[in-house]
Image 1 (cartoon, rainbow, N blue to C red):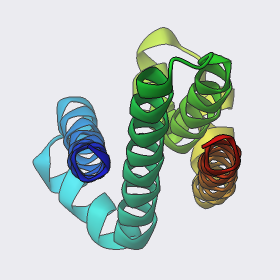
Image 2: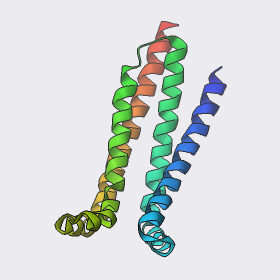
Image 3: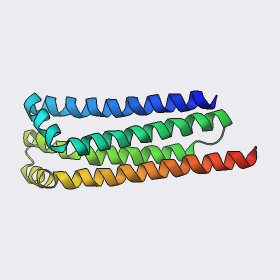
Image 4: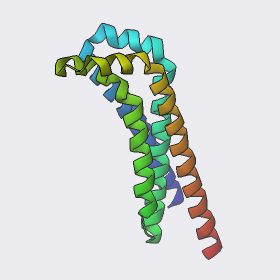
Length: 151
């Protein structure tokens, strides 16, 4: 049963990372076109790939913990907290794309701010992503340790 949970977690993590990349390209292509998406990806590929990989790791850890908890019938409160961490990382890392949408709304000052600090938004996303991974890893460790001592 443990290998099945592990395989499911890895597959869902890979799917999460892939879906984030699809979301990234779809959003940028819809807003600014294929050429802009290519230029942005070639300029920031390392940020985009690390963020999507980090998100995939969080999805995998979340899935592993969720499946392990449901198998042991233990409260799933920790999942809500870790899901919020992942969501915050996603919102932060993608918020710089608002710069392409906001001219339609007419908020040019905010656009300048977001565009000017695009790399810093990536770094904030990376920090939050790492924090989410650390939190989820610690939760998995504590859950595993607690269940090993109870057996």
